[in-house]
Image 1: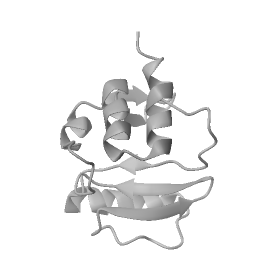
Image 2: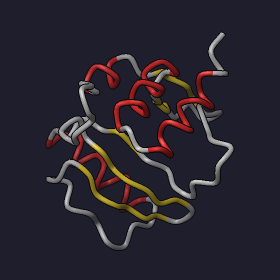
Image 3: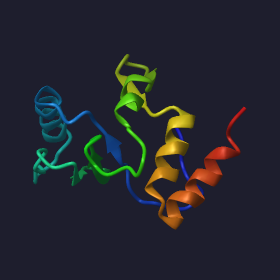
Image 4: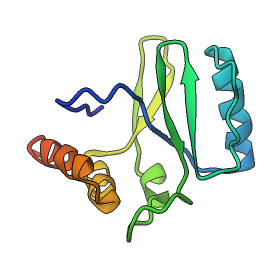
Length: 118
């Protein structure tokens, strides 16, 4: 997983936006204490659960010139000690996603990530 030297205070999640994943995401949010379920029919919504909050983003969100849907297919798969699968954007995709958003803070984060490349 990749973090930032700047305190962001959030955990942004990319998901595919399909009805099946919306159902699974609603169940996961409920199980983790989300009292105010977001409208998952939008390309970007805020969420808050015990210990984390951020944005839930789909490929329909404007990502500049980048199509982020393939990032979901290329996601790195890690497992916690209990075997729970955690998927996250690979480093190259995350850098491209940050650069495509184009905001100054995203360019700073992309610069941080560049130094992690082997």
